[in-house]
Image (tube, rainbow, N blue to C red):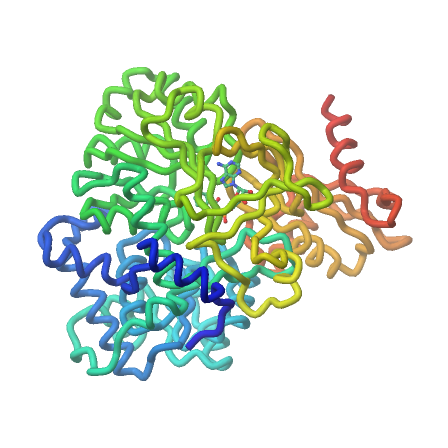
Length: 539
Ligand code: OOB
């Protein structure tokens, strides 16, 4: 079995007694639909309509072939697929034989993929020929040299490595193959991160399944729900909050889009009768603008009933425009891949829906809002968020040092968010973690700083957030150069980072070169001064 930090026994017992943990594997989500409505459409992907029966069959085919190829419970998989039906097929196939995937984002490049592979030592890698990393066979060969036994690729013809081929009927699932026990690791979520290397979040069947079931109920998902997945399918928000899994749980339909670009999404909404969509705030702004520019577009959105918005801070003024301009209801979501998810409720008054980021899923989500000394602050006063509960993890994978900082002695996870609590609801007002939230995409400053400092001419680097009207935040890198170094241009600096293989969304939007970086009284880089200096530039 895969090692991870378990919940203490008394808490685990309580989560079972309270009916949160029901000791079913996540694959039960599919199994339930097979008896209920096997011929209903589960996924619409381009012109393919995939029924629950077909989704189940393809995932069983792949599971059986992988089992035959020697994969078994406790193995790990590295998966990187775009928004295609195969993403869900692969997810369920791996779960079926107890192989835990890391679902990397399609925007991840060599740096992130190599790091995930280093951490989990995947037995199988599933990628796409459409991604630069798998366009030729060099990276696949590297992964195989490091121990991956199989690499399967979408968009490949050679049967032995063609994912499509592995989805066709093959052997029977061997007796004895099956999902890992429900209180073991089902898969790994990706952390937005604030550390030098990306961290992985072990999620068990029990904890994730609870968050999915409860989210589906809170968001009113039913078999009539037609859910548009336009955010990266692997992200926790469109996967489980309530996400595609919440939709499968209720027997509805997931419609896949390549991106949240408004006009393509509007066409899909009209053609497929989409009722529900999760979006990040910058995408909402684009949708609002598209309708304001051409008000006749609104008619095509008639079926859209509910828009979920989360992932980054969402201005109240923009929130108010959602029902007004788009004609649908709004539900705010403040969640994290580590666990805790908050929602405004469908029957909340407007004052809450527009101004708050929601309240926790579970009566047993414990929330503490703390001052600098770690003491609880009263309602209405901003403080650092700490939480524990039935679906909030207890430790990053193989990261004892970081865990010692991220968790307190009571097992509360400190998310690094600054929140205000009012009447049980939370409003996100700031952040203490060293992270940049670029329109919902999270950038760990330290990771980018380390890469910049690998440049022979750079002696110090500090990455800070700058306010941005569209994305909420962008990033600016402050650099100190080696004495006598020639000036480095922004394109040269970006090239340096791209050559290091980092995802493009992590590239600094701006660069500033200084003779030295300002320090705080204790000698740390004074990022507040750096941020203020940028504000002064634009003032
Ligand atoms: C979601 O998950 P992650 O893991 O990509 O990022 C979590 C962080 C939070 O700690 C917070 O800093 C920020 O993203 N965040 C928000 C927010 N929702 C997330 N900040 C302000 N307002 C919000 N509504 O982003 C995520 C996971 C599940 C559901 C929704 C979002």
